[in-house]
Length: 432
Image (cartoon, rainbow, N blue to C red; front, side, top):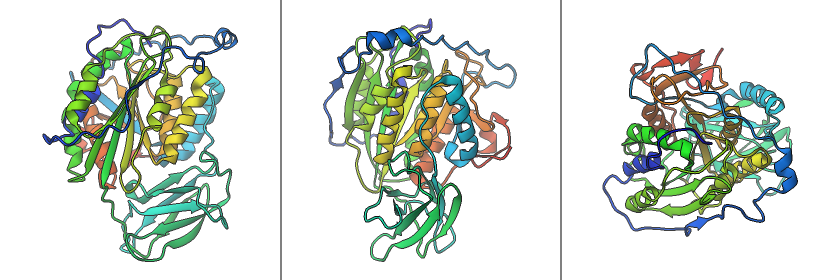
């Protein structure tokens, strides 16, 4: 997507975000993958002449006037929606948007929804669980209960089909037999365990997928100022966690590159070097190569086991219509690996990008985050299609998201940090 802006160095967002991660400690570099740059046009990626002539380009989103009044000048503001906690509303939004936008829809039918509680009655995050069809020898899903012991898994998206019931097995740490319980799909269940849960992640794989087209330059410069020190705060929730950083940057066909994948590293200075090598440019039309970038990131060598696998996708434009299905497929690949996708919609983001990014987030256990106009600065931001959210400084929001994932308990904004509230918000759930 292209806007008329200055073009300072791009990808500064992730650079500053990750600068705090190292905490001043330089570790041995672990590069899992070489830098892979996709050509601007390839035989596989290039659309045919027939496709390119039948798909009409979408107009750029109309700028939204910035809010006036109680704005916090100079502070980038944002909100978020956890659609897994508001699944009925999300399903209505998904169906309506599919008709209006004529874009594909992820199959989220018959979800497995549950909250695990330990023998002490407290929420049980970090419990290893498997899901299988009743009577099946092998599970179709293996992972860990999430923040506050929540499980939101979509069998149809994972290729298991539409199931009326599933067999859940909760496996205690160390010795002990698993607890087995049948669950009906489509309704939230409370599962009482005979043991307690405790989330103590052994590692954090944190990858950034960043749109580096010209329209992202100003946003990334502003975000750089806001995100300094975030991960240092988040690390306090999991002292000693082993961190790797990953980077994927992308533009679109016809630009200097389409996708560059730098893999993972443990060394913060190398990550910063990758980011300093980037610049914002290219684009030329609204859609960008988001699907190929997300697929490249999902294909990285994510670690297995008891840890956090987080992907943060920063963008202001969707994938091209004829590749939208590939974007959702990339999210399914991430979900199968236990990778959570957190979308961050920048200024200029339109309905198409929101629709695709929210679907990627909900089916992987992530959240959709979005910038707002409450700061009174920058380009206008589209109002999201959600009934409730709280606006805080972006730095506060992302810090809480990371600390929530690392600690296993949902952390809400302090009242003094809330700039504005929309709708009836209660611990991530819209009650209006």
